Image (cartoon, rainbow, N blue to C red):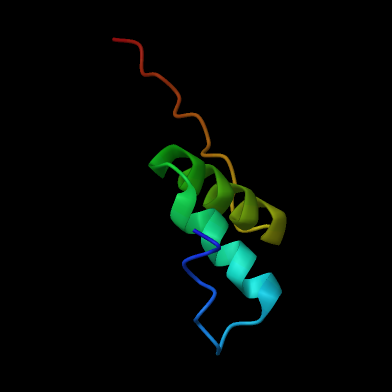
Length: 55
């Protein structure tokens, strides 16, 4: 994918490698990359467990 981005002149080399990583990744890998980024920014919080109601 990096080779395909060679002719994109408005991206710097570092940006090209990041875009190539995202384009070559599987859907699960893209989700993991996104999730790790959101967690590192502090926006991802675990959901609180709901208390089960006993009948």
